Image (cartoon, rainbow, N blue to C red; front, side):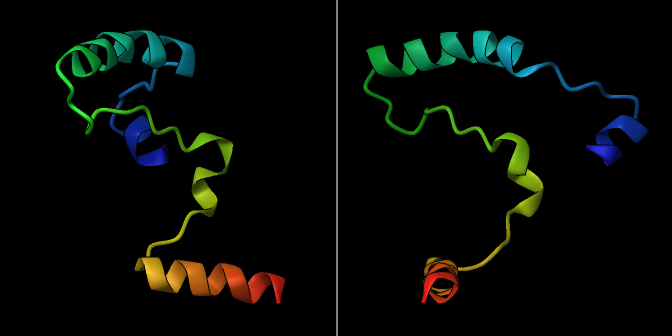
Length: 65
């Protein structure tokens, strides 16, 4: 977010992004294109981590064991 703001690019609010994407989702659904789904990271996007599926699942299991 800070890098985007530093470049003078404003990020529209979720509700507006969702409205824009509704046309894409509708088209994808009509044409059975399963790759177009809405994935929203939400407020905790900054807490995300990169890793393989195995690394992420192993880490999650380690948190509860």
